[in-house]
Length: 245
Image (cartoon, rainbow, N blue to C red):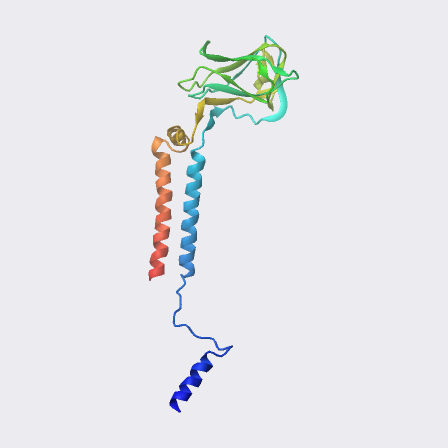
């Protein structure tokens, strides 16, 4: 009888609708641990994305004249004319980028000049070529910042060319042959060749120090980055300690 009862019980355990209870119960991480995992994965993905983006090579600016480019022709330069406007020329400038307009299928040849202290300290020529919206007129590289300079461009023809920029009062506008134009021409001071952001890191660190702090100088950016990393590490450590408590 005992054996028959055990057989019936075993058969009943295999009857449909009877769920077997497993002794194994997988442990799930707590919500706080899950949050830490998500944050860690997100930070890692962000750092990888930044590293990949910073490794890309392209033409980089040394600076600009801060003119808000608008879809306007603010200065017109006939053949043989010269346009000038004052601005600080940053170090490492090796080309001037302009927004240009011309009705001819061929863009005229342009000569760029940087004038400081009454003399031309750098110049270069862009030969005539197909019409484009933006042009880079090459220069001999500027090795140091020129705080007071005249940035000039001459149209060697053929045809007339206009420049994009923003409207300003006449006393602030660019001049062509001494005559004020409709506004200031947008100028971008381009560095030589193509560079990654990693290659620009020393320059960025130096400029960050100039703009943010005088007492730390070029160490301002590394110090700020160290503070951010320390704050993140302290936050993770605090959360882990609370979890284990």
